[in-house]
Image (cartoon, rainbow, N blue to C red; front, side, top):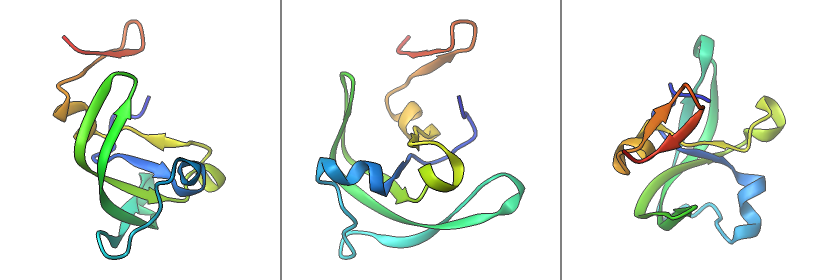
Amino acid sequence: MDTGCAVTIFDIDLIEPTGLTIDPVKGRAVRMYGIGGQSELSFQQSIHSLTLNHHVLDNFVVQLGQTKEPYGFDGILGVDFLSTLQLNIDFKYMVVRKP
C-alpha cells in the first residue's frame, strides 16, 4: 500500500481498453516524482467519471503514464482520491474503508 502519493495515477497501456485515452485538449504533460527524486513524464487530465467498486467521482483529475513496465504496478489511488471520498486506511487489516 502506497500512502505517499499525492495524486491518482494509472498505467496508460492497462487503462486504454476501458476507452480512457490521453486527451491533449483537456490535459497537460506533467512530471511525476518518485522516491529519490526521479521523475517520469505523465499526462494529467480530468475524466468525466471514475468508478472503483461503489465509489464514484465526477470530473476527477488523474495522471496517465507508464507504471507497469518500469515499476511493476497498475496504478496508485492517491491521497486526492482517499481524501475526496473521506476514506481511511486500516493498517491492522490492510484495507481501505469509509468510516
